[in-house]
Image (cartoon, rainbow, N blue to C red):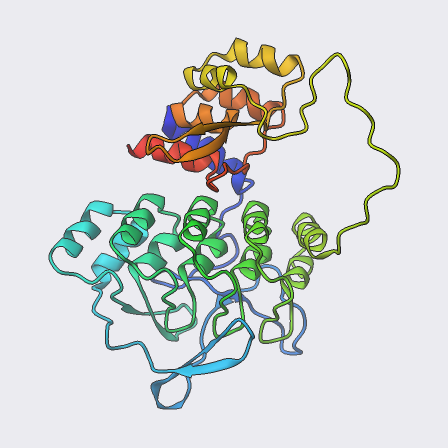
Length: 358
């Protein structure tokens, strides 16, 4: 049942779009950004994706958060990751990868491979797992000490790969492990720009919440907002525009008092423990009854995790965690936010995935 919920939530996250639709991936495994026309115009929707940019002497180019180019040595010395194992990481074959690591393989080993534009690059297991959305493998690699911000030889990080593929659950886990959010690859692309290119609204929201810089420019001078607009993603562009807009002054009129009949539901932490536990048990009628009385579908309940760590969870988190598909459907029908995060930054998709893998 949890597998069904994961698939159901995932379809909502990505709005039914394939990350690779119209954009051939590098083989084996990494993505890039939309090519521009020869006149240097805006990024064109549906254009091929690329990465590249070797410097003389075998060095490559990368960019810091400021956008300035920084030469660095070619990452060939630790390129000891066999193509077979890298391909296993792309396919999510966790046991094969773990077996190789147990035999002495390096978590941050690099695999030299060729992008589909003919240029050579080097990628790690974490890049492959993030690019193809394999959450369990990403967690395992991080647990084994994978360097979260280690760039490929083209400057791409695992966070960029997750954003470029629209893999929200992976992106959130990487952010929880303090991935650098504003790193730029050799083309000046950030994770936010990559998510904006495809219109992955949930990923864009998560990156904006994590305070991604909306003003950074790619090497052709475009921001994430301009890239979203150029590719026709109006809803994504609006998200970025609203985030970047200065806060509006508060209205002078006093706030209206709450309805004396129904309790105010303005605080997100207003989900009674009794109702939260009903959601965990899949008691649909009890949950619906509470909602009909004015309960907020995205209300949060302060509780603790199994580890004893305090947290706040919503109804959708509880239903997804315990595999109650009917309740998940009902909550979504009533407007539950599919990408609502717990106080620990986890979504219903992550809960459903963890429940399945436990």
